[in-house]
Length: 141
Image (cartoon, helix red, strand yellow):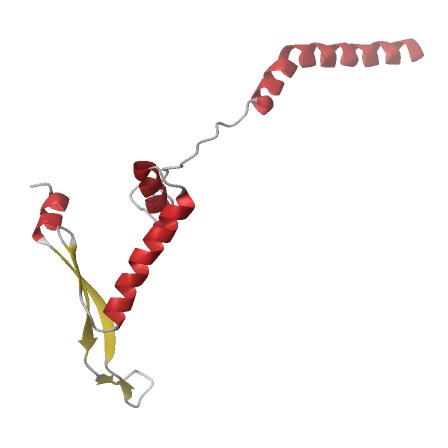
């Protein structure tokens, strides 16, 4: 009985050693391979058709040989300037792109199903109007 147990055990040990010789190198190749380092990741963030501020900064940095941090500061300055001007009821016009301004939505009242009257005050809302050159480039005419 002891001899039989040793023989079965040695058979399993031999089969395991053969398995590790055959597939051990394959498994180690899979785990050792380093991931390539990409300095500027131009991958889209959410979907393939979406760009966020970080993606825009990476594109600007790559095109103008800047760091991503420098291009992010430039974009933040541009966006903050647009927001500040529009919030002061001003207008920002960017040639061949469009116009940012604000509009005042009038006050209104409505009756919800729960009863009573709810008054909604007038609010200022941002608005963007695309210029014809931008519309044409999107529609690919």
